[in-house]
Image (cartoon, rainbow, N blue to C red; front, side, top):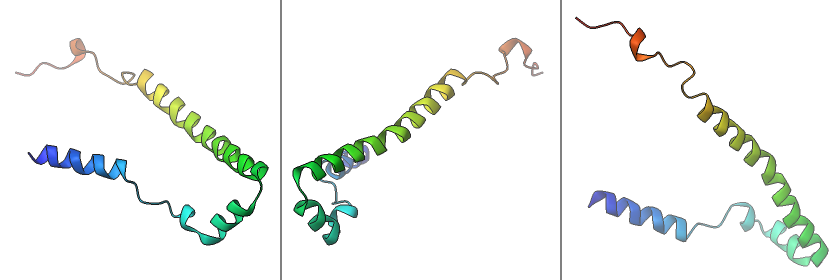
Length: 83
């Protein structure tokens, strides 16, 4: 029952996120809404471009960690026997 409640709370937080701090800035919101369509397109493109490097870095680190996960593992036959 506790696990179900945690899942419902998590789903609610994901479904109804709180507005981001930067989106609530009145100056930024006014500036973006008063700019033309080219500026809005450039802003959206810039956001996507700024997301690519961290995504690539995290993906590469995850792949390297997954491939090297057994690099320092001691094989079972080399373990000392318990007596």
